[in-house]
Length: 495
Image (cartoon, rainbow, N blue to C red; front, top):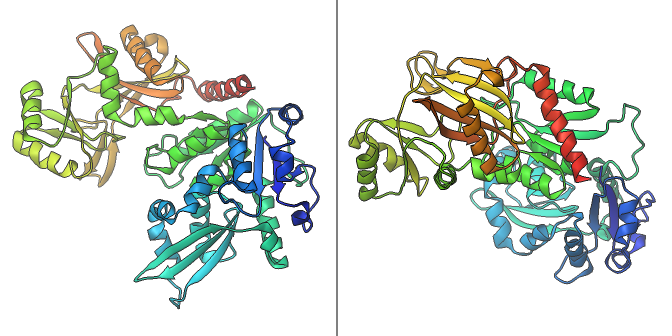
């Protein structure tokens, strides 16, 4: 767990709150700080700074406390990025665009169009209808106190966001602030719980409503069980728990990842807090883009179906037809679970499909089509194979997943078969390991096809499935223990 230090402009600013040993002034932190003294008092050396200076203007005490905290490798709230983003309305207006739907929903029952201001303490507000919006604003701009102005202009909009000051709070506000800070930190004055102490805390990010999650409920329960048996407390968290990341020693993402998505923000946040992270941000960045993957395969001479990167021009389409021929596979750069992948049989069909796709992306992949009854999926963790499966094509379909199944009216998938690693062809394992090594040492699922006793890479997944009775069919609970043990190894290696 991280050690938490509170910085206040003047010690009297903390008079209304419980006395704490880790209370400092800017002078203490900026000038009199002794790194060796403070790190030696704490087991894992991680330090969390809660910067409650009266303002964060450029070159103020508040600004420099956050700046030096980042230079010293301390985790700090607010970060310099949050301070700078909030200083210019242009930046936060861009970042809050995604809040629009939730904002209109929150104001749905609002009977007036009069301007409204709320105060957010560590992601919490007393305006219950705006709590979800408040938490999302805090996730974007993590600061202890935020004041947000809303106004009506044909729809509800965020007019301004600014930081608040501890010394300006009323007695009633002080109670709200103290309660929110207590919930946020939980470690400054809260009494130790009587429940069993675990060596480490592992958060598993999941989405209970996801249609095709990378781990089903039973698999998640098995991770929790394996954690307990290894003295690791495993807790399931969701998107709403972004602000809690620093409470844990490690983060395991069991939700489908994407770059422009909260899963990537979670990975980046956890990494910046010093946590062990699987999937790590770099693995997500590399695996979720097939354009990058294509170039990586080419530069390392790894077998893959013939592939061309194409842009929106007749010449490029013609080249793809001449080089690859029909039928041909067209792929978007960031598809998953067989989504964004199309088989075209003619130039007319190709033009129709790509015309729509080029509205969303500047580049596409055109790939040779060769059918096999199944794809190999080799699960690899830290350059070691940990499971091997055959994923069979959906009956009557050319992919593992059929997203347009008119018979069953929903997503359909093919059968699967799990094998001991020793029973998998050696060229399949060696090709999978070679590919994974180019990405990193995290957890990957490498998909391959076999043809003429050669293995061809189809793709590599940073967030591979681990479902009960499928990937664990051979290893059983050992699969979950292996992954938990790897987290423990990495946590201890960080120390």
